Length: 71
Image (cartoon, rainbow, N blue to C red; front, side):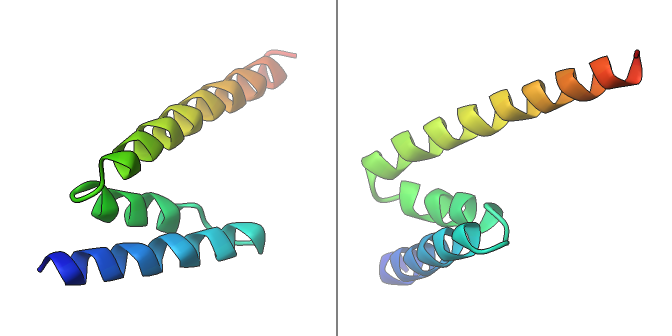
């Protein structure tokens, strides 16, 4: 099971990075990091960093859209 999880997590992570560079979705990167975080502590750190960055960017986008609405 560990080999399947690591293989699938690696494929999702690498595929997500490629699709992020091309017009695509970052969700594959997050999914790959979730699978890899079960076995690698470093992946847990990357996952926390990426979740914090996504949350702060969502708050920033919400703030910009809210200010645009009130103009």
